[in-house]
Length: 123
Image 1 (cartoon, rainbow, N blue to C red):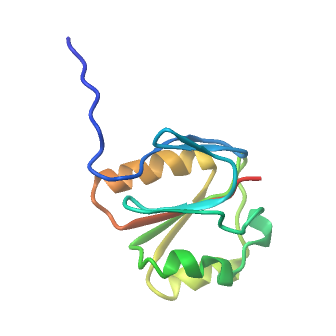
Image 2: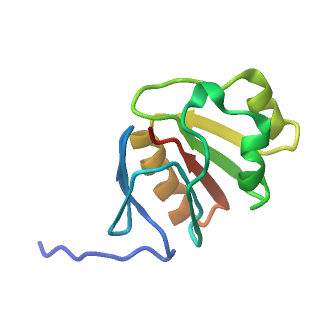
């Protein structure tokens, strides 16, 4: 069987992530960032999921996502309830998971042409 490398139909794909770094396309990022299938916004000023506020979500929500994916770092953690409510009250789904899981989820949703916005917390 012959295998072929298929490039995604979107500009930005996650190649992997952990708590300290992420690989977007062929570029290594060391600071928290926001990604959509068509945009990469570097230097999102969030350094810990515990300190995430509804105001920190504004740059992500401004991109009008259908679903919001938050990569919380190397280990599973959840933001405060008011952060979750900031999305749910607007009818936007929010999923919080480790960065590795968030990277995989982002790629799946992007490949399904879903309007996904993801924020990755790197420390």
